[in-house]
Length: 79
Image (cartoon, rainbow, N blue to C red; front, side, top):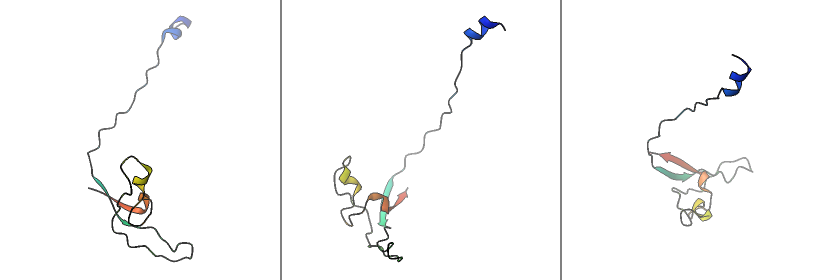
């Protein structure tokens, strides 16, 4: 293997292909935001299900119309 052979070598990069995940439906149920965390307590508002405030694709779609919390405060259920 001389100097000229090193110039003609090519690098091969292998990629790991992940199998496709099965399609699941996602629902957001009861709100788990602790409104008394600053006082050292635990109080939730009782919102039972996430209801988007706006159309899909807008920022309002991430706010719950029932309790006003962000969608991340609601428990995520995949089925």
